[in-house]
Amino acid sequence: MLRKFGIIAVLAMLVTALTAAPVLAANPHTVPSGAPVTCTLNPAGDTVTCAGELAGLGNVNFITVTVEAAGGCATPNEQANEPPGHVQSTSEPIRVSKNGRATFSQPLTVDCPPGLDPVFGSTADIFIFNAETGALITSFENIPITQL
Image 1 (spheres, rainbow, N blue to C red):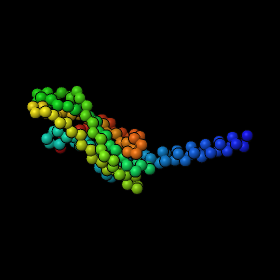
Image 2 (image 1 turned 45 degrees about the vertical axis):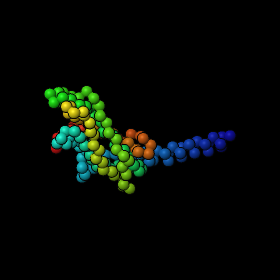
Image 3 (image 1 turned 120 degrees about the vertical axis):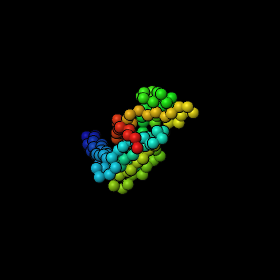
């Protein structure tokens, strides 16, 4: 009985060690020599595009990128106010290279009816997910939205 308990304990530790190793291998970050994570508003004012280059994604094959920001539609004289709505956009799966790198560019658009203009807040949040498991890998919050 004691021998069975010992074998089960060793197997449990082995399983724990093997499953923890891939988690420890991932260290997501932006690439210092690559493109920083940025969000820009196009000249027409209807699309914010957030882009960047990531490394340290570990044993992930595909990622998805979700961009969120305050946004909505307003009359031309309401443009100075922070929009009360929320807009979100999620990418298709993006392949991660063998060395754990991925580049993304995700647009965020507001479609407004005639007479109203799209309005975005001053910052955006970017969430990087494992496309296969749905687990959050990392996030970049309060990224300033700059105009082109």
